[in-house]
Length: 412
Image (cartoon, rainbow, N blue to C red; front, side):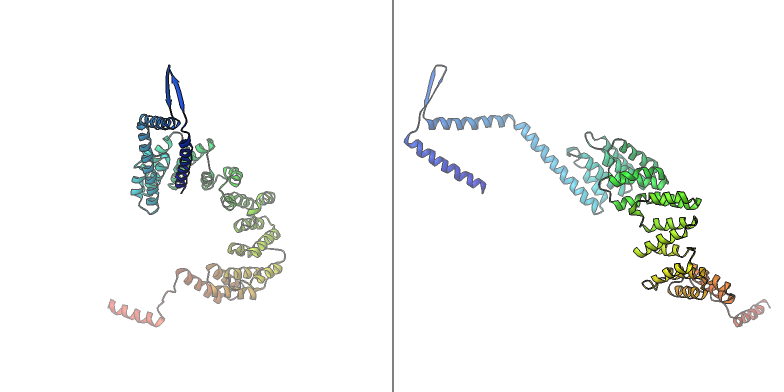
């Protein structure tokens, strides 16, 4: 449509100029080297137009070779882009061998050859061809004027996958020294420190994990949680109250409601004799979110007022009446409160819902303390049957006597 408007405007302008020149064609005189050239204005304009197109033709002729080379380069780059797109599609649909071949087909003509090398390396890795994978990654690292961060991160990821932790750490630390370690690379480095149990190095990465773009806070919490778990567990093992308080104070707010962290603190607090603090944190956690490990830990409390602790646990039965772990927790607390009949009822109900060896053992111990040894042995027998998955079929006394007579006859 725009071209049509231009043509219409040109025709209109031509009609106006023609109308003006028809009345007065004008006169142009040019003196060059003593020669006088005379012509009408219309002829002069036509000559100028002809000279313009002649100059353009000459320039295009002179630049024809360069123009042809540019077109050829654009065509080859288009082939390379299509090849890369096709390779990514083949990689996604699981045709890894073809993806590797396609990605490297026009690699010499690509504007970003490192992308082709990385796709080829990924395809080789998925085929289990570690040699070819390393070769493509090495070529990616040789590409000039390109950031080597993607290649080094992929290399570290592959090394970590194949348990080559030291080599992976070296690749990521090399990248970190250049200041090119992105969020994903930082997570990989943190994962390496966590697997190696290097809590000091992991703690040093925490601030960067929380401030680097692209790393969600929940993922950062999950990555560094083991640092705080380790400190809490160590304080519980050494029964160091001051260390426990300092460790709990340092836990970020986003982790103080994490079930695993709260349970670790509660168990450490129990070990340090701070039963009330452990009960408070466990109760607050369970009132906010239900967690089986926290319920189990609540049953291990030895507070000064076991009846009150039992009351809190029994209140949860209103919403979780068929929870076998909560029933066993209530039974433990009832035993500490010396309410043995209630404890027995809780354990029998828990076994009826979901039999567990721990519940069998607790009920058998309770019955033995109550003097019901035969019943306790029956419970232990049921626990053994539950452990092996079935009850053994034993011969009756009548069958045994018949079998003994048959054996005696065979001996004669």
